[in-house]
Amino acid sequence: MYSLFSSKIKIRFANSKPRNIGNYHWLFFSALLGVMKYLADPNNQLPQIVFWLMGSFANVSFDVWGAFVVIGICAFLLYMIRWQLNIVVFGDDEAKSLGLNITLLRKLIILLSSLITAASVAIVGIVGWVGLVIPHISRLLVGSDNKKVIPTSIFVGGIFMVLMDDLARSLISGEIPIGILTSLIGAPFFAWLYKKQKHL
Image (cartoon, rainbow, N blue to C red; front, side, top):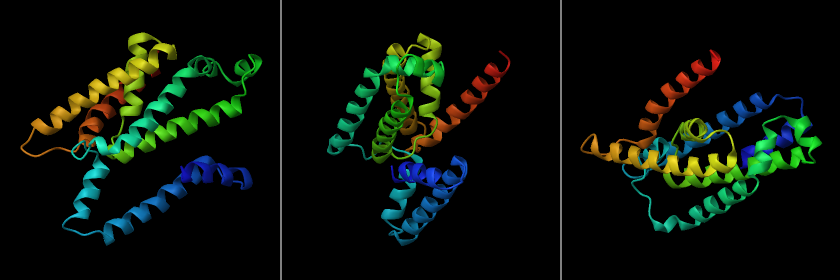
């Protein structure tokens, strides 16, 4: 969240491109993470940090119910503005002609999405490609109407993560970090989808 809002401030008051600002923040937080790993107990804390960075459901319990509340509220609010999300797809001019405050709407969407992402990562760590792959699968199944896409994404995403968790626990005697499995599936799928859209 700090990275999101500080990037907005720096872009407004400095002649910097958003991509460059993002790179600066990535390098800064990577350095902080490196310091945390260096100072961590190599026998206890360091393995937990590394495993969290690769994603895992191993330590998830009902003690993190607060994060589930945040995810539920933000997902509900996104669903309540589903018709506005549909209009934004047609472009800024179309949205403004229909009376939408496009700047405020974008800020709200980014805020809610960031809160959902932050709460999810806090629980299970970094699980890549799910946020890209699952919505595209949902659109292939039910079309582009967010009234259907949002609940379908939640349902399909839940099934996908349960399957990945089962694979992570059953393929070997230990547990494979779930982020590795989602990346192995998500990256080829997204490459196929990009190639398919390029030929349309």
